[in-house]
Length: 185
Image 1 (cartoon, one colour):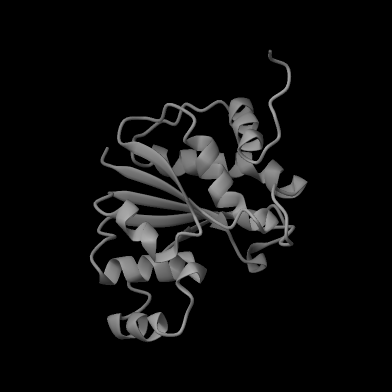
Image 2 (cartoon, helix red, strand yellow):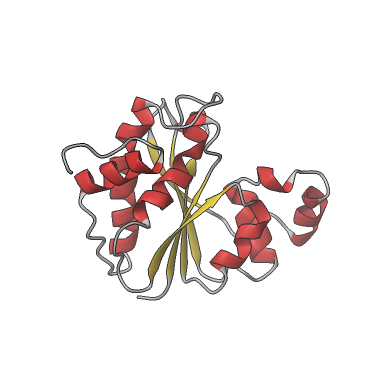
């Protein structure tokens, strides 16, 4: 089976940009299979590299570009760990704000540093709302179950079953951005 990290990233202060962060936070509230853990990386940028060290599989959950479809579209992307040479990584490092890392740069840097030794993929959702404010748009909240299903597929490929009930997951997701669960006392 190996060790699996589900790394949710995103800025919760910018609407749907916070999807990955909310997703990982919600998932971390469940009993996950042995060797699987969910971590809310928020906007940690380069600081997230230590979280992925030694993992056999890192699944990054994030908001992705609108080029992947209309708001709420769910995609699974393979990440080429060799997309950037060590020289390109060094050059870019001097030019960008470390809090603005995209998944590709995070993986490239982690690969150059020897942190990402296992497989890496991204499961993303196309955002609808990227303005100042917390919480998710209805389109992206509805897409959360599609992201959960894509995650199940990735884990099944490794012989891992994710036993998280979809309704319970949606309730946990809503709680992660402040919408209380109704129906209980």
